[in-house]
Length: 422
Image (cartoon, rainbow, N blue to C red):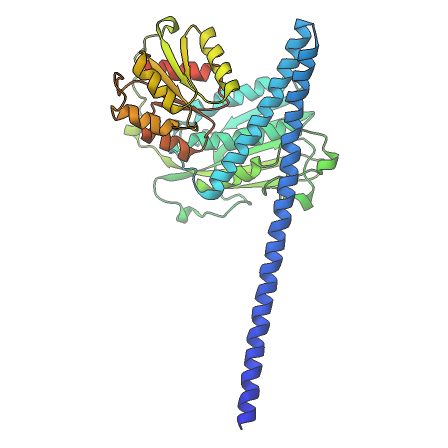
């Protein structure tokens, strides 16, 4: 009898061990898949980064070696195009990382559907004339015009899909329709009963007559670095392939989804949905017109730039001087506070990451009145490479009036200076 019990116990232990081994083998396969995905990710990322970097460095080398001003200008303009491509890739990576970690909050506000999207669509219509494409768009009259939602993120998804459509369509058409979601096939099914009161679902469709996407590639199209085309045979600029992954996560953050209908050689139709709130009549009234703000005169302003990186410091100083500002510089936060205590300035442009004293702590010291002779309310604008929403929140919490990220456009910097000085 004891032998039978022992045999039963051994069989039970054996079964448990087999189950544990099967579980470990499953985990090992998952881990190996993650390692392979990471390897592919880094390989593709290296390719996508090196291509625009090569464009920037190559064009700058050509610009340095040519005596012709016209030719030099052409090379510099081409270098700027490559730099913009590199910036877009970095932005995609940062945004994907923020979405992955849950650090990208939605910003919902009241918006006018046509006022927000018609200028954007008209701009793409103008672009189509240079590509011999027929571009059309339709915003369904059945949709309420006044809605509440994250219009910036919704517009970001639409722009990404339109950029892809233009990139992969050499001739034919691209079209956009915006209408109410009526339970069409595709995406995550949301019944009318499940929709919360006072909410509606917008359905965007971007169609094109481009190269289309093979069926076996559609399943992974919304994964990072999936472009729907063989990278070794790529005939069109498809970017890093992070855009669609970002689009999917943004759509799902807004209680919607994104999906594709396509056949290779016969074009594509990308759909996405987002959930919005319905604005009541009181909230939908137009806001009062803004009062005109007085113009800032650069010649009357002295700016302190706190920036430790030499090239960025030279660039920003030259930009400000060309705009007519008087500029003094500091190479770190500690020197910035010392200079502020010695000579009066009207505005501080503050980098965040600096040696000895970072920009956040320097700003806190100013706001706390710890710098002799300095008005604690002096305008401070962050000018930094920290581009995450959480970084911006920390900057504003430290007391910064505006938060600009590098690389910056000169008009954007001028607008920020205008705002803080008024």
